[in-house]
Length: 71
Image 1 (cartoon, rainbow, N blue to C red):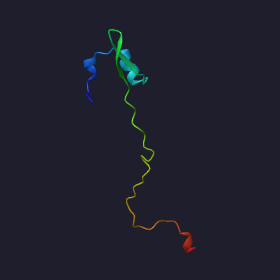
Image 2 (image 1 turned 30 degrees about the horizontal axis):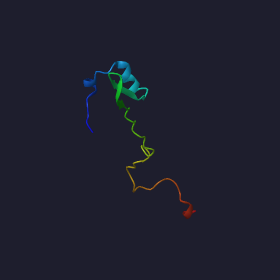
Image 3 (image 1 turned 135 degrees about the vertical axis):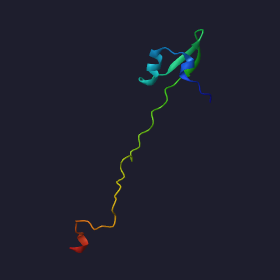
Image 4 (image 1 turned 135 degrees about the horizontal axis):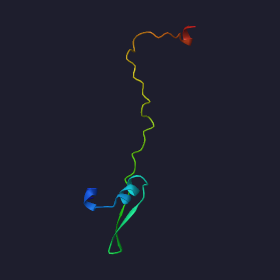
């Protein structure tokens, strides 16, 4: 797949807005005939486990809770 910088296409600002913000498909034409479709790049998927890990600094010191097995 070839990569082309968006600046070389000289697209009008409203077309770029449609791609970036509205996630619309843009049809490029050459003398009125369809030439190519420009699709918005999908947003990265969110990671459901992000920020779910808790890092403890001291794993050896005793905690203040009594275990049920000791009662």
